[in-house]
Amino acid sequence: MSDTAPIKCSFLHKGNDVVLNGRPCKIIDISTSDINVDLTGIDILTGENIKGTFLSTETMQVPVVMRTDYQLLTIDDGFLTLMDHCGSTRIDVKVPTDELGQMLQDAAENGRPAMIVVIDCMGESAVDPYTIQWE
Image (cartoon, rainbow, N blue to C red; front, side, top):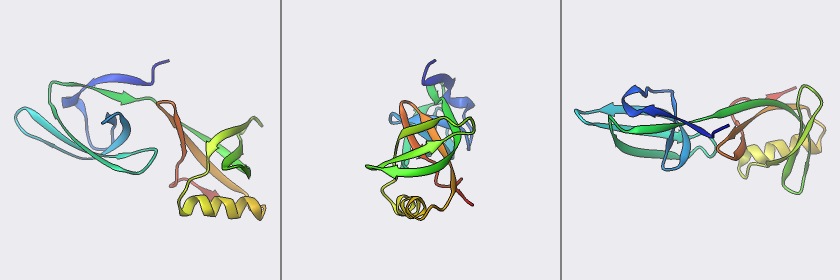
């Protein structure tokens, strides 16, 4: 399965996912002129703002994004130990380096259950900071 799919730039809308500067982004602002489309997006894995200007006829790439629910079990050597609804475990997702990472570390150390969503896209994985549920 491919990591991306093609789309004409003129078909993109606010809220769509698109690859900007090689990064998977959600479009937060779009403006058009006669021949150009100005896009502003937020990297869905890092939260970084990315901008670009493209021809309206240009073919862009839409990232294939997978979101999976997991229960946080433990943290070991900077990686989350996660379990999905089938009982399968995953140990390849890095602990975020920001405040969210510290919150997850505290939850794991104190046995506080947390449900998280992991975003897998273009060969990378990250915790979705907007979907954590503390039980």
